[in-house]
Image (cartoon, rainbow, N blue to C red; front, side, top):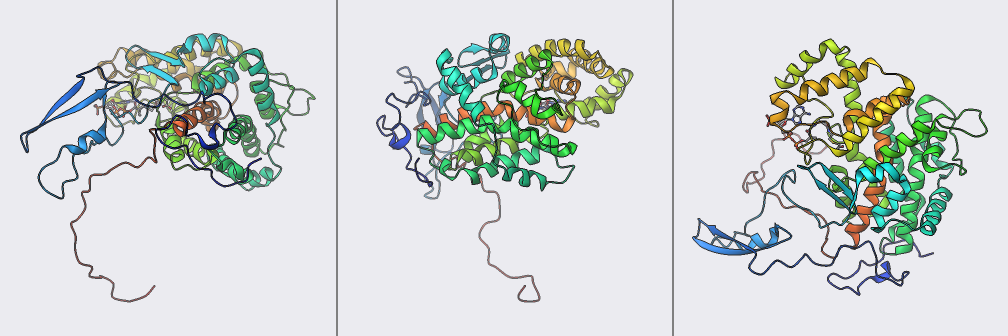
Length: 473
Ligand code: CMC
C-alpha cells in the first residue's frame, strides 16, 4: 500500500510518462482520452481580420473548434495588450475538454454512454454495468462484472465514526448538506487516496465512493427520520441494498417491491452521466488541482444541490404542491410567462432543445410505478402543465421541453421518498459519471489546473486613504 501524500502527475505530452499511474497495469490506461486533438483537415482554419489594426490572422480549426489560446496572438501594438481572450461566462459555447464518455445531441434528443443509446441501456443494463462502462469505455465481461460487483459490495460499510459525524447534524438537516460534507469527510479516512496518479489508489477510491455513497445517503435519511441506521446487507443487489438501508425495520431480510427496484435502477442509469453539466464541471475543475477524489466529487454534490441543476426535481414537486389543483394550471403558466411566478421547474435545458430522451423514459416509468400506488392528483397536474406548455408559444419558441427532472420527483414521491431526498438519489447515480469524468480529466495530457481568465472592470490604480477614524481592531 503506497504511503499517503501526492505522487507526481504524468509528464505532459508523453505517452510513456505515466509515473505510478500505470505502473500497476501492463496495458496503457483505458481511461485516458487520445493525447492530441484530431488533426485539422489541411487548410481547415478561420481567417480573422482585426479591424483595430487591419491585420489578418489565421487560426486553425480542429474538432470543429478554435483553441482559445490561439487568439492570444491577436493584439494591438500597445505593449500592455496581452492579446485577445474569449469571454463566455457560463460556458455557453466553450468546450472545456475532449471527452470519450457521453454524447448528447440536444437538437435530435440523443443521449449515449460510450456509444450505447440510453434507451438500450435503460432497457437491459444494471447500474453497476453502466458505472463500469462509463469508466472503462467497454461493457464488462461476466468475470469483470462479477469482480466489480463483489468489490463494490465488499466496501459498502462505513467507519463507525461516521455515526457520530452524522448524529451531529440537526434533526432537520437537508440530506444533500449531510451527503456533501460526508463525502468530503471520507478523504480524512483514506489519506492515501491523495495518491491520485497511482492506479491502485484511484481504483479503490472509485470503488469506495460507489459503494459508500448509498450507505451515507441512507444513513442521512434515517437520521432525519429519527430511525436507527440499517447496515448494508451484502446479500442484496446494489439497488435492493440501498432500499433495504432506507426502509428495513425488524425484518431479517428486506424484500423490495421489484417494480420499485427496477424503476430506481433505471433512474440511476439515466442519471449516471450527462457530459459537461454544472456538477461534472465542478468535479473536473476542483479535481484539476490534483486534490483527492473524495474532495473533488463533493464539489459535484454541492453543485448538484442547486435548484437549477439536480435540485430541480425537488422544486418540481414543490411547484406542483403549490399549484394544488389541475384547475390552477393555466393561471400558473400565465404567471411563469409574465415573469411573476418563477420558472416552470423541470422544463428547459442548456443542451436539449427538443424532448429530453431521458424524460421520455421517465414518463413511461412514472406510468408503471403509479400503476402500483395509484394515479394521484399531482400526476394530473404534471400532465396538464406539460400539455399546456408544449402547445404554448412562449415555451415552444424558446424550445423549452420537459427535462428528466419533470417526472422523477413524482416517481420518487410515490416510492415514499421525502422531497428533500430526491436530489440525493440523483447524486448516488451521478457518482458513476463524476468518477469516470474525474479520471478522464486526470489522465488527459492536455488538462492543467482549471484557471479561467477574467475581464477586469474595477477601478484603475488609486492611492490608499483610510476612511476609518479609529486605528486598530
Ligand atoms: N420556465 C420558464 N422560462 C424558462 C425556463 C423555464 N423552466 N427555462 C428557460 N426559460 C426561458 C428564460 O427565461 C429565457 O427567456 P428569455 O430569452 O425571454 O429571457 C430563455 O428561456 C432561455 O433561458 P436561459 O436561462 O438563458 O437558459 P439556460 O440554458 O441558461 O438555462 C436551465 C437552462 C435548465 C437552467 C433553465 O431552463 C431552467 O432554469 N430550467 C428550470 C430548472 C430545471 O428544470 N433544471 C433542471 C435541468 S435538467 C437536469 C439537470 O441539469 O440537473
